[in-house]
Length: 438
Image (cartoon, rainbow, N blue to C red; front, side, top):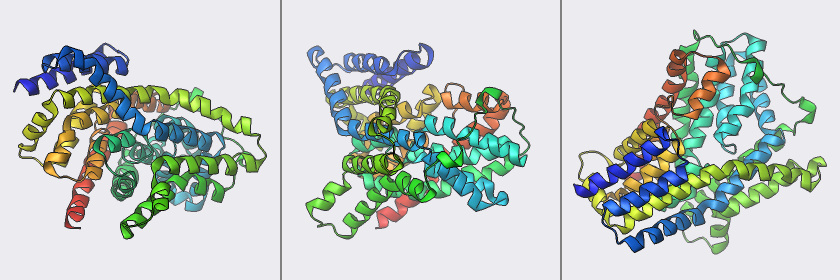
C-alpha cells in the first residue's frame, strides 16, 4: 500500500507541477522522479544515477528515429506535397464526398506530419473549401482533424508511439500494421460519421488564419507526393510482413526493417523527389531540417523525463510490486492501461505526456500478464487521446481557428477525441482476440 501511495504521490506532484505550476515537463519529471525515489526508500546515492540511466536508455533508442521523422515531415510540408495530396483527394472525390476525402487526407498527411504542423498546414484548405462550397466549417474540419489525431496517437514514426514501442520493447513494424488495422474503423466513426451530427454548428473563422494556398504550379506531382509521404509506412509494413512470412530471413532484411534505417532511406528519397529533382539546391532543401529539430526538441525532453521516472520505479523495485497489484485487478490489462493513460490525459492535457507516463506505470503488466506489447502501445495511445479539454493546446487551437464557443468546442472537438479514444480501445480489444488465437 505504501508503494502504491508513493507512486500516486509522485504522479500527483507531476500533475500539479505541469498543469497548475506550468513547470517545463522535463524539470517536472525529474522532480517527480526524485520524490518517488525518496518516498520509495531508494539509497540516496543511487537516485541520480537511475534518473540519468532512464534518460539515456529511452532517448538512445529513439532519438534518431524521432528526429528523422521530424525532418521528413517538415520536408513533406515545405515542398507542398501535403497540399498536393489534399487537393488531389478532394478533386477525385467530387463535391458529394468531400468529408470522406478530408478524412483520408488527414490520415495520409498525418502519417508523416506531426499534429500541430498538419493542423496549421491544412486548416487553410478547409477554409478554402468552406468559402467555395458553403458547407459548415466544423463538419468539414472534424474528419480531417480526426485523421491527424489518430495518426498522432497510434502510428510510428510519431513521437509517442515510438517512445511506447521502446518502453515496451515492442516491434515497430507490427505496431504500425496493427495500428493501421485499428485506425481505419476508428477513423470512419470519429470522422465522417460523427461529423454528420455537427452540421448545425456555425463557425466564425478568425481572419488572420485565412491564409492563401500555394498555386498548383508550385506543387510537386500527385504520384510523387503520395509515394514519398507514404514511403516509411510502405517500407516498414512490407519488411514486417516479409519477416512474419519468413521468420528465418537473412540479416539484410532485418537491417532494412530497422525503423532508423527506414526513416533515413525515406528522408533521402524525399530530399531527391521533393527537392533535388525539382532543381532546388541541396542547402535550400535542408533549411527546413533545422527548424524541424527545434520544434521536436520539447517533445524529446518530455520523453527523456518520462524515462527518468520509469527508471526510478524500476530500480526501487516498486515497478514489479505495482505490476503484481495491477495484474490482480479484475480488469483486462489493455483496458487498465487505457484507463491509466486516460486519467493522466484528463489531468495533464498532453497526449505525449499521458502516453509515456502511463507506460512507465503499467509497463510491468506486459511481463506479468503476457499481453501483446504492440497492442499495449495502441491501448495507451487510445487512452492518451481521450477527453481533450481546456488544458490541451489542441482544444484552444481548434476553438480559436474556427471561432467557436466553449460549448461548441466541447461538442465537436472534445467529443471527437473521446470517440477516437473509446473506439480505438474497442478495436484494439477485438484485434487482441484475433492475435491471441493466432
